[in-house]
Amino acid sequence: MRRAVPTLFLAVALVSCGGVSSPHRIAPLSTTDRANNASKIVQFIEQQCFDRADDVVEFEAGLRAVGWQSKRTQTANPAKPLELDVWELPNLTVLRGQPVMGGAWTCSVDVKSPVAPALDQIKTALSMAIGKGPDNNGEWWLNRTSTGRLHVTAHQGVVADAGDIFVNVEIYRLPWWRSLLG
Image (cartoon, rainbow, N blue to C red; front, side, top):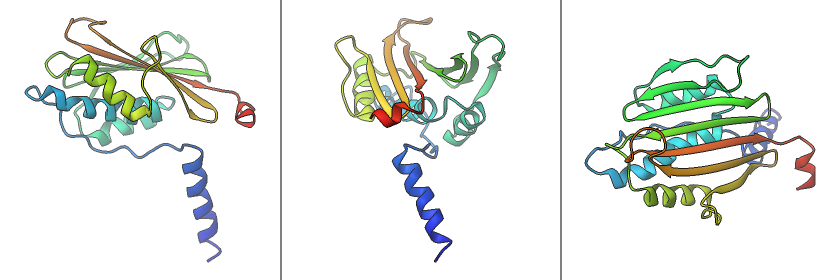
């Protein structure tokens, strides 16, 4: 019984502190039922960008767990904070970087037009995942944990094709003492 208490305590601590969720397989994206892709894309963004963008090893493990084929095409140089890691997946490009050492990360997903749902469908799915709608500027700000803040935006046709959807997530690690302020 004594051994169960520390394990239970650790599990409760991880849940209450917003610990990283386990990545799950996601059904492949469809070129014929693009509306149904919105929830799959947002699940992917939530798993990869919300939960593991600050750790490249966890990020890559999450990509493998999703079950979609991926290939890393660029590795960022840690000495150059504006460089990004890039992965190509079927109909997606995923970018990940750390523009501010130890304090901020970025994770972006460019959804290619053959599988991209309507922008409103992505925004609705994002609002459901986040638990609230966007602010007046069409952006979401949320405190994911007591020391972690997210900023999410979604746009159409930003990168290459007017039919693409581009979702960007900025992850900010706040100082530990912020958790004391509430």
